[in-house]
Structures are given as C-alpha cells and as structure tokens.
Amino acid sequence: MLAAFTLALALLTPGMRAPFDKDAETQSAQWIVDIVKHGNWLLPVDYYGYVERKPPMFYWLGSIWPWLRGGPITQTEARLPSLVAGAGVVAMATDWAAADFADCGAAGGWLALFFLVGSYGFAARANVALTDMVMTLLLLGAWRAMRGPLNGAAGRAGPLAAGVLLGLGMLAKGPVVIVLAGFAALIYIVLERENPFRFARRGWPYGMFAIALAIGAAWYVPAFIAGRSQDWGGVFFDENFGHFMPAAMGGTGEAARPVYYIVARLLGAMMPLSLLAAPLLLAAVAGGFDESKRGAIRYQAALALAVVILFSLGSAKRDDYILPAISPLAMLYAGLFAGALRSDAAAARLRDAIAWTIALAAPVAMIALVGVMRAGVHLAPLDARLQSSDASYAHIFLGGVEALRIPFALFIAATIAGGLIAIRGLRRRATSVAGVGIGLISLAGSVLFAGAIRPIEAGTRCLGPFVNRVEARVGGAPLYVAFNDEELAWYHRGAIPHLSAGLAHSGPAVGRPTYLIARPTELVRLAPPVRRALVVVMHSGALGGNQPTLYLMRAPVAAAPAEATPD
Image 1 (tube, rainbow, N blue to C red):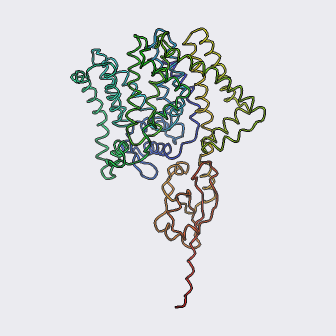
Image 2: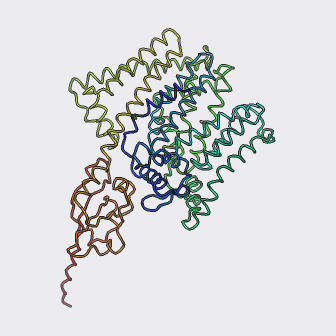
Image 3: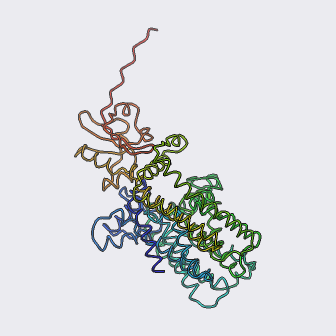
C-alpha cells in the first residue's frame, strides 16, 4: 500500500499547480483562511461573511499545516487534503483489488491503480479544494470495513471501524455518506439473494449507524445552535434535501439535469475504460464471472450502483457526484483482466475485442496525429464544433503535440508503448499483461490532461493577473463589484465591497473617481443612466464568457427635458 500511495502522489501532484476554478475553490480556501486566522473551527466564514455551508472536515484538514506553520494559505495547501485523500483511495483500491484477485498475484492491484489514476474524472478531482475526495476515501474505507459483517463474519471490529469512518464521512459531506452506505448494503443483499428483512434483525447495522450519527452530531448540534441567527438550519436543509428534490416539490431547483446525466458523465470520466462496461454487463447477464470472484464483483458493483441510482434520482446533478463510483468501477475493470471472467465466456471474447480496438487505435491515432501536425496541417475547423473551453483544450493539446514538448512527448511514447504491451499480451493470451497496456494508455492520457493541459487552460481563465493590474491602476480610489465575487476576492486577498443600492441607482458624486468590476450579466444591477455613464478602463483578458471588466464610474448625465408639444 505504501508503494501505491507514493506512486499515486507522484502521478497526481502535477495538477496541483492549476489555478483555482472559479468561486467554488476560492470560497473553500477562504473558509480555511478564517479557521487559521480567526480560529472559527465550528462555522468558518468567507471574506464576505458567508457561513460555510457544508460540514467542516475538509477545511479542518486544510487548516492543520498552515495553522502549525503560522503563514498565509497558499493554493497548494488548500488542495492538500484532496491530494492526500486521492492517494489514499488509490492505495486502498490497489490493496483491495490485489486481495480480491490474488490468483493473478499483484497484477489485480496494480491494474486497479492504473485504471483509477487513468480515469480523468478521478485524477482531476484529486487536485481541487473541494470536499468530495475526502468523503470518497472515508466512504470507501467504511465500505471495506462493512464487507465482513455483511457476509456474516462475527466480531465488533468491522462495524466499529465502519461506524467511525461513516461518522467522519458525515463530517466531510453530510448524511449522504450514510445514505450511500446503507443503500449500497441493501443492493448487495439483494444481489446475494438474501432476505433484507432477515438481515434487518441483526444488531450490528444499528450500532454502526448509531456510532456514525453520534460522531456527526458532535458537530451538527453545536453548529445548529451557533448558526440559528444566520438561518444555518435552512442552509443545511437546502444542501442535503433541497438539492435532491425537484423545484416543484420544494427543492432548490439548482443544477437540475436529466436523469441520464450521471451515467453519461461517469462514462465520459473513465474513457476509454468505459468501453469495458459492455463485457462487465454481459458477464453479469450471461453468468460469465468465475465462481470464486462473484462475491467480490457484486460487492464493488453494489457501491457503484448505489452512487449512480441515488444521484440519478436526485434533481441536482453535479460532476463531482460521480467520484465515489469511479474507484469500485476501476476495481471491476481491473478484475476483467485479473481472472474475474471465465476464459470460455462470451464476455471474455468481448473484452479481448475491445482491448484489441484500444490497443490498435491509440498508437495509430498518435502516430497519425504527430505526422499531420509535423506536416503543418492546421486543424482549425475543429473550433467550429467545440465549446470555448473544449476548443481551448484542443489548441493546447495540438500545440503541445506539434512542438513535442516534454509532457506531450512522454504521453505519445507511453500511449504507443501501452498499445504494444497490450497487443503482446493479447497475442499470448496473457490478459493481465494486456490490462497493463490498456491501463498505461489510460494513465498517459489522464496524467497529461490533469497534470499539464488543465493547468495551462485554467491559467488562461485565471483572474489573478487581472486583479493585480486593477490594484495598480486604482490605487487608493474606491473599488466595488456589482455582486459579491469570491474569485476576485481571493486574488484581492480580501472582500471587494459590492455596490450599495444608492450607488447602483444614482452613481458616484461628481469629481470623485470610483471604479467598478462587473461581468456583462451583472450590469443589469445598475440603473440605465449609471450604466450609460460607465467608461471601460480594462478588460480581464481571460478566456471564456462573462469575464469581468474594470469600469470608471462617472456621475450620470441628467436626461434633457422633453420639448413641449403644442396642444
């Protein structure tokens, strides 16, 4: 596990240098700043005084090193809990898969590592200042501790460990962690064809959930008491129940998306490995799994299904919600190459066909792309079919390939090597070797995008340089924002006050230089005369829509009186 943890840290660390992603990460970092500077460990607030909406485990962890060091919070330090938790998830998945697929020695574990870090949806979330990776680590640990009791093993260690981890998970993300664990357990019981009502008569689940709730209550009860004046209870309801319910039933209506959204995002986050879902489903339907591996397969499938079903039923659907499903799926895909399938099963033949396709297509595509780019062929027509962020990614990728910069050259070499290894394994019917090749192809793409392309692209949208130029231009003159802006506040190292209603309606006094940072969609807050009097000072220069601009606010010119008309 230590070797897997260390390797995961090395593979995931490069993405730490990407600038913060808009207001979500910058606000998380501000809550950490408040804990370190002001000691608000119970209910930290951001620069604008907004109380932290989620349980504080992530912010506590992010505060430990800066608090001990006594220095300012850096972007990297704010992301450290996710990085360490991500490496922990990888280490656990590696050890777990090695134990479940021990017939192949350590191959099953290392395949799980390659497949997990090789999933961009996982690697990218190990470098963000958000709570989801810490929650995933605690949920996965609890799920592993529950396996023995769910299979009838006696003893108190498993339920006790699971209860403690679920309680800590509740402090990281809320009651949804307990709901996911309970739902996954129910799915596993059904898959094992056990009577759920007979299972309900066992005592350990109640003790486990009681421990988890007691740990969660140690923070929730004081938070409710301390947050009464700020309607923290209403915020708690919205975060845990309002997002789940549709707006017609009293939900917030935020991030409402179609029911298939979670499945679509999960498939996209694990490409090309997601192609292996076909043999996985075929084996489940046609009985293609080896008898000795069926229990392990069902157990991992139960957690993945619980995540997909629960969040698909909810009204709000965010990309982060898929994270707890990626690690069990990575272990399931690793099992396909580590003895989980019978060699004579139709699913094994389908797995080989998909592996051949990936092994041949990836190196051929890389060689062809390098040849095209080196020949000076311009692929600009792609821009017309892509959104701005996707077009930016494409430009960075194609430019890196054309110049053969070191990260891109390593990616090309690893992709070709992975294809050759997979082909060799398939020709010799060494499925674990073929899996290593497929894993190397996935790993090369994931590390390139998370560790090189994403930081470059995020830099094109970062507002830090813009804020520095604004501060140099404005000096000591009054500076406002149209609405509270967490991203601008982070780079300003403090809240930029928002316009008062009077300024928005009447404008500043004559002769007093006053500046405003506003995004195009925010100008509706200003009265039309005030809006017409604005003078553009500088644009942010950042890519993407709705980027902010610095304006000089002038006193609005009074409208000329209308001429009298004859009766």
